[in-house]
Length: 328
View: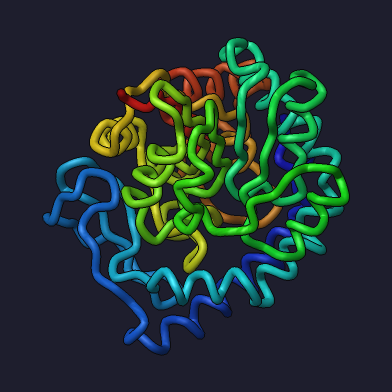
C-alpha cells in the first residue's frame, strides 16, 4: 500500500493547517485544560519533549507513552469535534473522496481479520465505536449476515447516514452509553484512542459494555512508530488537539491489563511508515536525516520493502493493533 492510495497529500496538508488553527484557538484559554497522569500506566514522572501549536507533549518515564499534558477537558474536545473547520473539512474533503479506496484497502481487511480470528461471534452482537460512514460494519455484514451489528456514533450527521444504510445506531459518546446496552460480544474502535481525553476511563467503559469474555479490537498510533520517531515534533501524525495519546506496544498492553482485559495480540502491522518518510522528503523537502536520505536516494525497491517488513515485524510501525478479551 502507498500513502497516495488512501489520502490526498494536498487535502491532508490543508486539513492539518485547519487542525493547527483549531489548536491555537484552544490553547489561548488554558482554563479549559486539565493536567493528567500518564494515560497508559498512571505514572506521574514525565520527561519534557516538545511544544506544538500551543500544546505541551511529554513522555512517561515509566512506560514511554507520549502524550499531551495538560490537555483540553472532555467537554471542550466534544465541542471541537461537534463543530470545527477541521472536522467539517475532514468529512467533506479528506474522507469522502477517498472513502471507497479506504474501504478496499483498510476496512475490508479489518472485517476479514475479525471474521477469520473470531468466527464464534458470527451470530453475536458487534459494535463499532465511532462508526463514521459505517464502512467497516458494511464489510463485516457481507461476511457475517447473521450478526447483530450496531454503530456507536455521537455525530447526528453520521448517525443519519448510518440509518439510511440500515445500520442501527446508538447515537452517543461511548462514555455516555447506558448499561442497558451492555452485552456486546465484540467492540471495535479504529483510530479513536489517540483522540481520547481519558483512555483508561474509555476502556473501563468498554469493558462494562462487553460480556465476560467479549473482545475489544482497536487500532491507534504508536509513539514508537518509525515515521513518528524520524519526524518527531514535525510528524504530521502529531497534530493537537486531535492526537493527544501515543501509546506503544508495551504501554498499550499495560493499559489494557489494568482496565480489565487480557491481551490477545499487540502488533504493528503497518505498511506506510517508509512511504510516509520518503514521500515527505521527496515531495515536501521534510528532511529525515542523513541515513534515511541515503536509503531514499540509493536504496533499491527490494531494500525498501525489506526495511518496511522489519519495521512492521519488530514492533516499530506507527500503526498499532491491539486485541484483548474482557476478564471475568
